[in-house]
Amino acid sequence: MNSFRDLNSDTVLRFGPYAFHQRQRLILDGDRPLRMGGRALDILQVLVERAGHVVSKDELIAHVWPTSVVEEINLRVHIAALRRALGDGQNGERYIVNVPQRGYSFVAPVESVPATTLVSIETAQKHQHNLPARLTPVTGRDSMVGSLVRQLPVRRLMTLVGPAGIGKTTVALRVAELLLQHYKDGVWLVDFAVLDDPARVVDHLTQTLELEVGTTLDVLANRHMLLVLDNCEHLLERCRALVDDLLASAPRLSILVTSREPLMAAGETVQRLPSLAVPPASASHSVAESMGYSAVQLFVSRARARQQGFALREQDLKAVREICRRLDGLPLAIELAAAQIDALALVGLQAQLDNCFQLLTQGRRTAVPRHQTLKAALDWSYERLNQGEQTVLQRLSVFKMSFTLEAAIGVSSCELLKPDQLATLVQRLVAKSLLSMDQVNGTTRYRLLNTTRTYALEKLEHSGHLRTFEQRYSHYISRARWVSGVQVPMQLVE
Image (cartoon, rainbow, N blue to C red):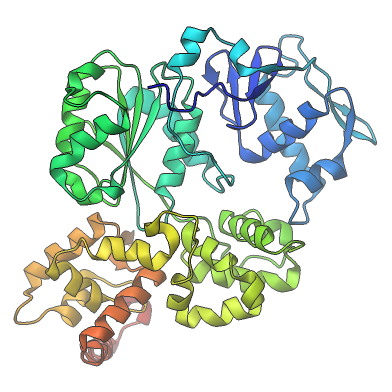
């Protein structure tokens, strides 16, 4: 299995008991990964690379927050977190000192060494992986990634669940990177998106691990490794059986699954991945405050990569906030929108929101097919629904806001789709991450993401039934406003 890249193929910066793998953005205390936020890592990298020299506060801010205006307090907060993570000053060891009126300096000796000198050849051969090289940093997922890194070695089977474009694969790969040193037999990505035949699931796994043809899974019995099973939603039954077999036969194996619905396997811990944080309408007109929201951070980062010199200004805040909100805080949708900043500018992007399906069809040629456009990602989900699920998804798209099951039945049921059938299909759409479900004042309410609604609405139009269900929706809402002659507030209707 020597065709895979070894973890220890880059130069490492050593100081005290720590080893800083810059390419992996990974800091190890011995063989234990340190949990550290992305900003703190950026600061540390600048200071370590210029160890022994004073780096001004303005220079640090310009490097770590190149696209926004940030107060000095933000830098101080991250420096303090960095010191805590390194145990700065706890045992007499000093790493970062504040030089009054000048800035900060990394004062511990730093040694730059080839990674292969840190471990024996035998250990280096064991730490292998097939993870793709990361081209961009992960935005807004530090808390989720940290939680998964802590839990996975103990819980053994965890499934990341969420809708198309939410970033399940991105988070899973980041977790895998941070756990590279924990699993002595490696970390392996097995992507099932390329597979349609359930009968080939085991063969695909063994081929990915470069095991000999005909090898049984028993060969993994004593392996201490992490498997990332990516895109399992269309092979649920077979993947569930595979996972059950693996966990039973290989007690030192951990498995991280990504899927749009849970496997429902024994011992599975399900973690739903939320959207990125979007500033509320009540947010102030402060660039610094807006940049505290991960959806805005991602938009600005990708816009700057596309348009050199792009910077978020106060007059842009309303437009950027609206773009991120209308795109549901979905990382893929935000990236695709920001990629058009050159062609459309912010005003043009905002104008396109009423027809955000146009934005969803713009693509990234370097991505895998299902991630090149958000439409492709939604196609992937939609084509794997049965006819009843597709029909209900289309009909629910006429709801402009959240709705109750009673409202869904009132608008969508018919002679061929009875209320009890519709209720079951609604729950299936929730399980498949195409419909969100929340408790609001003790009432269960459902909602389609704006992007999913736009997609389903077009499907309904193509079916020729859009006008029919728009009228049914309008009539239901009109009737629901009045109960026993008393007008009901609209928030109770929708």
